[in-house]
Length: 506
Image 1 (cartoon, rainbow, N blue to C red):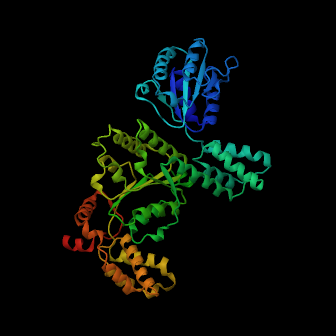
Image 2 (cartoon, one colour):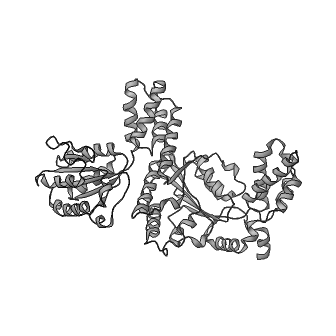
């Protein structure tokens, strides 16, 4: 059982909090935890109600309140005042909009303050009407800890007679973090049924279950990362910074006294390798990559956005150590304080940046932004991220490196046939994404003529592309001046400003 939950829940029971609301899909695990805590806090009884079966765990009133939620609440008043009871109401969120139910709950909130009784509503999500926000206390029930997962794995393999190596046990536990106990049981039972024991290959089964679980949240995506640090052309300062922290999540780093790295904010114009960097970090550090679309945090129901934000944080921390990639964070939180959405964006933003500043878990956050002016000042304050890097347009030397990377993937066997130095010289102002698009266009030219594409084809394709550096010249110049003022660290050892704009500034 999670120690922090046990401690907090026991405290709420002793403090006579009458109405508790616990959002979780792990109904069985939560009820077992509550039963254990109930014995520790005055040996209280636990009565469970659901809409189909009525009350259970009560021999004298089994089935009472069946298909009648109001009757289920009225039963609570019939229990003698001095008898300690925890009433668990499953899926009761579905009835809270009923005026008779909400009124009855508010009446009970008054009368139970002086009694050793507590009502616990279990729901897979938070749905609280405004009239009950003051009387209901929301309690988070975390996903299983590493110790709980290890205990469950050991329990499951008892029947097989298998003894797991420390490495396999650690790999299984680590891969299962972030899953509910029921999902862990299901996937491990499937593996044992398949070949009678647990094998190293079963880690992939668990990871696939994890991908399914994360997809079902519709908040985070489990993103496959195959890109390597060597796939990033240029950005030498940023790559050096990342390489120095390659072992920072190890136990050796903890013994040395190093804290977990917190994260990076990558600022720059589009197509300069910010997203590629997030993927390469995950691959190089051998950590799972979670992608957050911040827009998915915002829901239409009251309290839904805040609930999704907490769910995202809990899931990311349960999967730690991991990389949390937040793409174009400037679009999600631009003007957070002035939006006319009853303060929802401000509350979500406040919860998020507070977590960034206070988190102790090894969740490495990589946020990217194209428009620094749109970011709230609080996001740039020290302590949110380890470092803020400015990722500018590649200079000629870096463009040469980018051409080599892409051509190496496309035509590695005859890379020498291409004049990479000339290509880099003839493509001033081009971003990495625009260089990639140029090569794709050159391939179309060659393919349409039944031959391989050449340097001349690439130059012809480049002549047809108007780079963003020319269409967004003012924005790029603002970003460069902002970085040059010491607001951010340069990702490149040399200025990444557009060649033409750099010559004008000089």
